[in-house]
Amino acid sequence: MKNIGSIIQLAYSYTRQFEHTMDIEYKWCYYFEPSKSLDEHVIYNCSDIDRYSLQNGTILKLSEFYLLSRLIELLLRDDKAYTAMSTFYASMQTHYCCLICELERYPYKEHPSHEPELWEQANVIAKYETAIVQACRCVEALIGTPPQ
Image (cartoon, rainbow, N blue to C red; front, side, top):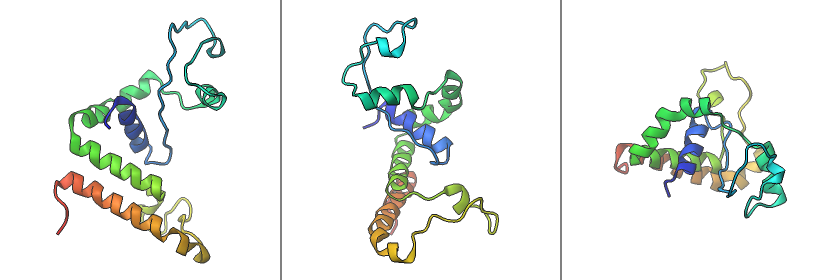
């Protein structure tokens, strides 16, 4: 479902080449008082782990939202772009690979590939296949039709 949380998540991940992603959850705080600490506020449906994440998670400044604004506007306006980016995000969540290194020219890689060891490969084939299907759906969303 397209909402501002998912759009910020996709825009943030895309601008960081999917090296760093964030999980966005909505937590409600009524009557926020800026002069009080976060511990003094009542935050609904918030466990101790959630409260820790609130204090130590990713904080986006207004200037970062400005840098994301063009991409946020595109994702709000264009359903194809939103669908493509969300399916690619799902692909990266299923099987992560460093895009910076994988797309770099040989031999100028910043670090070796994240390929599994020989004895681990049988366990990840299903993840590879799922990630490839999701990446193909990303392309299908952009061109509008599935390949023949």
